[in-house]
Amino acid sequence: MKALLFETPGENVSYQEVNKPEISAGQVLVKIQAAALNHRDIYITQGMYPGIVTPIILGSDGSGDIVELGKDVDPNWLNQAVIINPGIGWDTGGLVQPKNYRILGMPENGCFAEYVAIDVKQVHPKPAHLSYQQAAGMPLAGLTAYRALFSRANIKKGERILISGVGGGVALTACQFAIALGAEVFVTSGSETKIEKAKALGAKGGVNYKEDGWHKNLKAIAGGDFDVIIDSAGGDGFKYFLDLANMGGRIVFYGGTRGNFKVNPQKMFWKQLSMYGSTMGNNEEFTKMLAFINNTNMIPVVDSLWEMKNGADAFEYMNQGKQFGKIVLYN
Image (cartoon, rainbow, N blue to C red; front, side, top):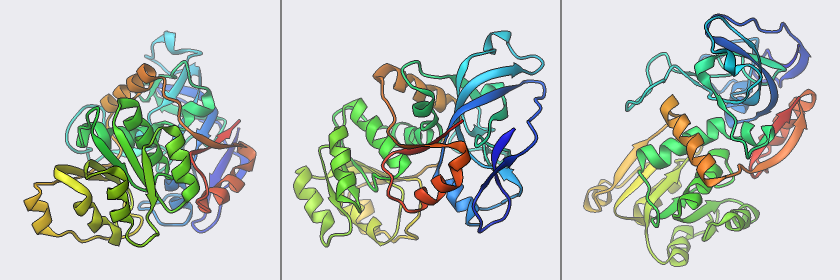
C-alpha cells in the first residue's frame, strides 16, 4: 500500500510503498478515506516530541470503511463507515490517563496511509451527517476540546466562555462545541481574519492578542468577566486570564506552545478560581463527544483538502500556521 512515511527527525514525510498491515484478533482493517493533520504530527517531524521511533506512519485522525475483521470481532462491523478514536489504552473514566496511554500515529502506525489496523474498540460509527473528510477532522481535536470543556470546566448553557488562539484545531473545535451548547463565546487570535471567521460561526466577539491592552479591550467588548477560559498556549499572556476570570471562574489549559507562565496567588485565592490541566480523553468521553455532535448536527471546519500523495506539501502548509480549521488528506 502507499503511505506517508516519516523516517528522520528534521525531515518531512515521503509518500512511498510500505507493507499493508495485518490484523490480529480483536482488530479491524480500516480502508482510510480521509485523515487530518495535527500539530503533533509537525512536532514529531521536527524531533520535538518524546519517544520518537522511526520509521513510522504518522496520523492520529482518520475515517474510512472497515474492510476486514480479525478473530472474535462482531461481523456486523464489516463494511461499516467509521471514525477512529486515536487515544489508546484509556477505556473508562478516571481523573487521569493510565501509564500505558498512547496516541495513534506514534508509536503505532497511524492514518496517513491507505489502510490502518486498529482494535475494534477504537472505532465508532461515523456520524451520518458528516462526510469522511469532515469526520476525519474531529477525533483528536474533538476529544481534547470535549474533555476540557465538559469534563474539566463543566460548562453550562448561557455561561460566558473565552477561547484563546481560535485558529488552532482544538481551540476552534472548543469554540464550536461551546456555541452549540448555547454558551456566550468570545475568542482571541493573532489574526483579524480568524477572529472574523469565528464570529461568522457564532462567536460574540474577539480581540487580537498581539495588541497592547488586549485583555482590557476584551473585557470591554464582552461586558464583563468570563466564567470559563480555555487556553492552549500559556506564556506571558496567561497571567491576564486571572484578571478576566469571574469570581469562582474555571481556567483550563491543554497546551503550552508559548512557554511557561506565572500566576498571582492572591488573585487565585481571592477570586476562588479553579485551574485545570487537561489532555485528550477516554473512550467514554469520545462516545459522549460523538453523541453531542450527532445531537447538534455540528460540522467541523475543514480548511483545505489534499491528496495523500501531496501530504508533504500539506505538512509545509500547516507549519505556516495560516489555516482556519482542519487540513485533511484523502486517498
